[in-house]
Image 1: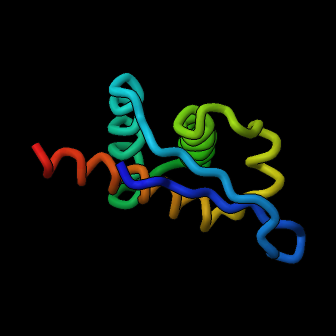
Image 2 (image 1 turned 90 degrees about the vertical axis):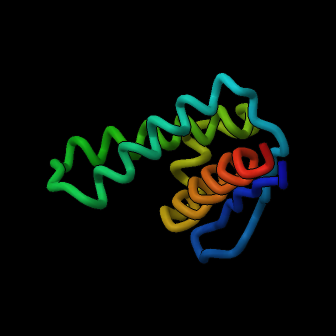
Length: 103
């Protein structure tokens, strides 16, 4: 698997830390598929704010798991831009997709 990076920034948007992960165990892949299905629903259906909030919290929890808890939930909330969070999620999904194509 290609490394996946997440960048932490300060209040000025300057990068302060970068974390990486290079492996995902098979157990987490099911969680990633579940989140991906929910993301697809968010894009194609009318959803409530509470559904979006729940998705966002579950996405952050998933990212913590993928990065093997190198940082905390609070660190993620305080130091990662929403755009970066979504980029990382796309990278995670891409890593799974490329693994499927190899087989």
